[in-house]
Length: 187
Image (cartoon, rainbow, N blue to C red; front, side, top):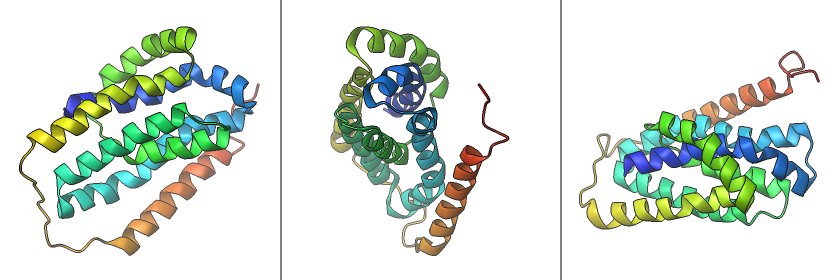
């Protein structure tokens, strides 16, 4: 179950890079907007990893794991149904909130091959549709077969102000890197 979930996230992250030209053509997006299709996912993953990890310690790992998989599955459907570049970028950010990282290398190594095949023969939207069955399997297994909840920090208070400072700081750092003229490639 963890392996399936861990496959979905890097697969979406790497396979979408193969599909960027097709997405750009469909939504008439420039290079900055295209970079945000990938960056929104990474940014959300980075800024929500620590706060949601703590929330899982407090509220229960099963509950947060299940919620994360629901977020990934629903946003995959919505990403595939995107009607604009802005909608796709926003949904990619929501996808990044549900990240779990373990079997990253399997997803990253298969993503260019499978992402290319899916994009070539079924269009870029198929990348998102392809992850939905896996997400549904994980949701079902988590809901039905994992009976107990484990929460090491049960009863502790969630640090909302600290989480907000962390989210704003990480966002500013990532946007700053994205906007820095020294770090941008010159074509």
